Image (cartoon, rainbow, N blue to C red):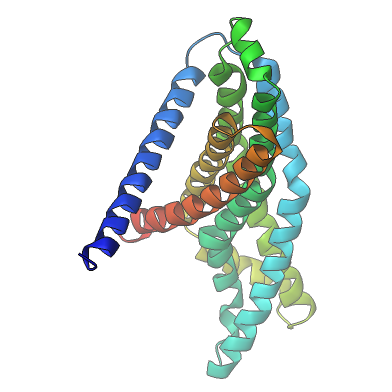
Length: 260
């Protein structure tokens, strides 16, 4: 019997995980269905676009530029061991566009936007504002969830594109300013090495990561417990779930795009 206890605990954990994934999937499908059915709340969408997109630019830009700069230094240092310093432009470009750009932007959005959405909606639930919306014949899924998820699907790929460009520029600045690379040659190697599939995969990852981040914030906010502790748990859980799902989705999408 003692040997069966660990198996029982593993089975219960697996069933709980599958049940949670099922609830999140149904929640996401409901959010998508509300995006395409009237009424539409343009003002809520505009506010979400501003909060998720424009106000995230500073943290995305700073993260990308320092990551690109550090990546150039690391590649140059590692390549020097094999007399392969010249590969810095190519590796910085492919590293930022394929992987680091989308993943870092997704994690920054999870840290900034997911937590904000979860805290906001959880506070509305605690203070019974969501109940008030229902009383006024306003569907909370359509008014609170759908605009935020749609805004993330729209603007996060744009943030990824901006982050990719800024990250490549960070590597360019370090390589030409400190490592002795010729600026024209560096840019030519960068452009020649990147392929359309690299850019498409980067933007597709941005769309997926944005949807995950916004959905997790809305889901945990709508299902938060009561009181300040409930809001805190919802905020913490939303960021943890979004970060894990973003990294898992990155692995799956990378396999889809580059293993064929």
